[in-house]
Image (tube, rainbow, N blue to C red; front, side, top):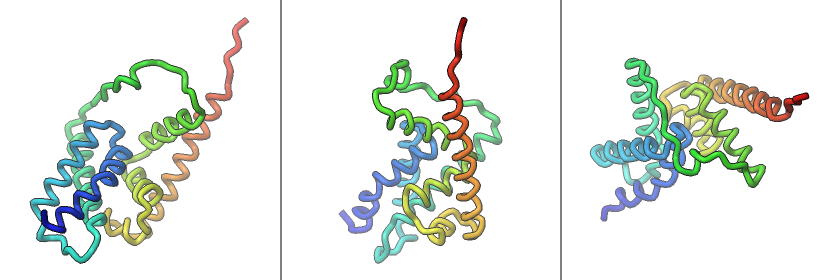
Length: 172
């Protein structure tokens, strides 16, 4: 197998993590990764083998995600995501970390896709502001603004969740 294809295949776990953060649905995320890989492999000549393919692949995935989001908005579709087996059952959490993790993921899904993408690329995937701005095709200042506003919005949503959890209903 060609070195370029091997380098691309090595990025699949990171692509899946980013897609799951963007979409929250395993099947939709896998579809996005597959679309990204298909596009990358069909345009292999656009990538030079002397650099890491991660930025190139994340850029492709982001553009596919934006196109998908726009298409959905244009159709004004309401999509109900089916619950996976473990999510369909109401079971008290065994660990505080899993509750906090779910609350963070829910809050992350509640913010705008542009801010979510900026936060995940910078905060989770660890790209620099300059790299992330290039990948998303926006000026660095716009990226920094989206990250700052996304963090603020995320913080506000998580504070609300914490307050709701702290309120107890007392029946007499």
